[in-house]
Image (tube, rainbow, N blue to C red; front, side, top):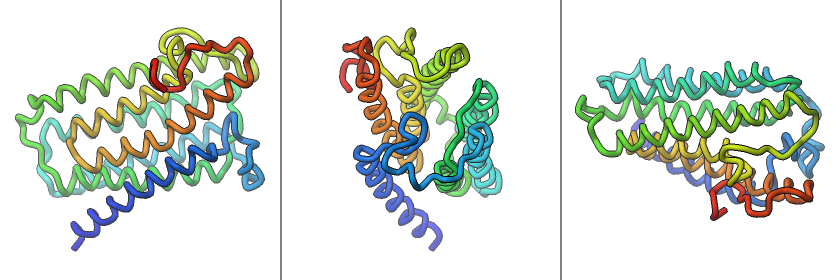
Length: 253
């Protein structure tokens, strides 16, 4: 019965992700550059950005870790690699990244709450899969999808972190918004988003699971519309913005 409920819930989760993608294409999430858009009147409560990042991100590895270690499924090297990659990503997002921000802006409380809810559900879905459903044999680490996934995940993490570093240095030296340059910013406006998408597509390939795929779908649903909207904002705001730079996918989008 629980297995049926899990699969049904996962199907609805996919549908909700697609709906979210379509909505965000029309209405950018109201934070950062878009904090004063047509959703802005809903967000009266603002909290420190660093606090928001910690609360909304740290819950994800907690949920994954709980289901992963409580679950009865026998764990292999591959299983622990999946957990460590997940935990490593969110350690950076929840602990390292927030405290590297200089003069961080306030964050809408509702944005933090929505992200928290997403991470609870997403972490539970993937943690339950790794802890209660799928056993990976010891030889799984030699499978093509595991090897490809590892390479892509590390590549995505490097793109993500290095792009964030460029933004953090830019914001530490100047106030307001400025044009980022260097590294993957030569090709796209949001290489940090591209790197994160690569990471979770890689995770889906590594785990070869619908649970992992659902996270990849949700990552695309959240970040691609925001990259498109932000790219338009950059072009509208800066007359000297590079015209050959794409939003998130080099040469294509």
